[in-house]
Image (cartoon, rainbow, N blue to C red):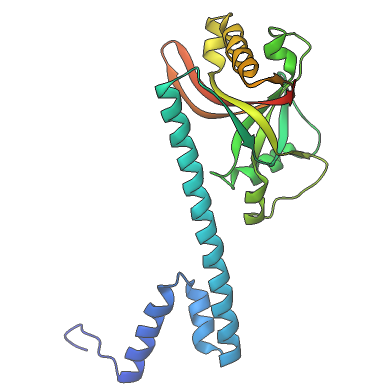
Length: 242
């Protein structure tokens, strides 16, 4: 029109409302176009596919909320009592390693694997596995020390990550859980691991259990300071009954 306004007839208005309605369900423009051009059976299929997408996204949001809640609880717990230990059931975890001590693991296409796992953030977390001797033999030089990424195995169903020989499963285990300060504290205070060992052994003795290995942990907080890298991590130490 000369005045710059566009006028719609009743059919065009109805279509415009339908487009807005379908877009409100997060349908792509292509899906909306396909829907409006399809017969009723194809429309049923498109609607079902979008419902499935929204259900998966709803599940992802619930998992994200759970991850944030775990982070908040860990930070609050450390703020209240940095030396606290508890008995807990560590869930079954799925992961892979990309570093062995200071050497990058070249087995498989680990760079592609890291990119695949990186797209699953925030369900994926940095992790490490150390041998029993790292803490209980005061940093024995031949102990295992590997770094990788992992997630709860229950979260794996949200993604299409390949399961092959490069992946490992850490079974559900009852563990002593504590939070410790990582790289910076260990490098600046050589006796820090000894402090962690005494803390864990005292708690284990009170509970009538024996710490074993391998020991898993994962980073959940770190920041740069003038003194170095301030780092906090979970530590899960498997136990056996005395």
